[in-house]
Length: 155
Image (cartoon, rainbow, N blue to C red; front, top):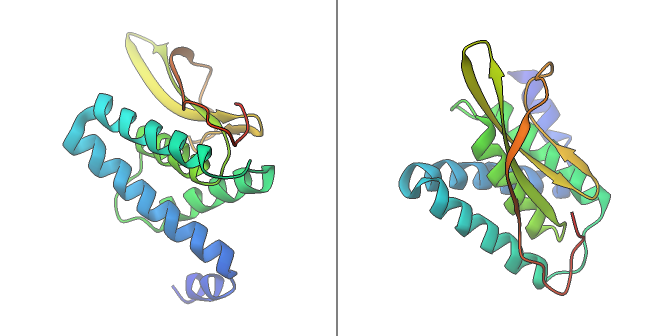
């Protein structure tokens, strides 16, 4: 516990802001998925990301890395277990707010007799996937790109 407090005190103001945005984004994604369902939550988050990108200068690779680190940190500090879909929706929104274009991807694969699903975000700066290591390849079944505005990178 003390180690976590010491690490938290060493965060810069920019890192604290990114952490708080990630924690709020993750909570909003969870709530939206539960209350609105995937289709409406997806439309809401994709629209918000597109609007933010249209009203902001293009983001950089540094913003992409910061969003990934902040979401990982928020996931570790969360009381609730984070799954890939709320994480991907939150990442999609946060990258849009940072001016970074992204594409939300949902994939599926066979695991024996079962079908497994997974969600992640891709950008021109890389892939943001907070899944545990060792997850195999997925066949993409849905790709959602936020509508482009005047600013932002293309995914």
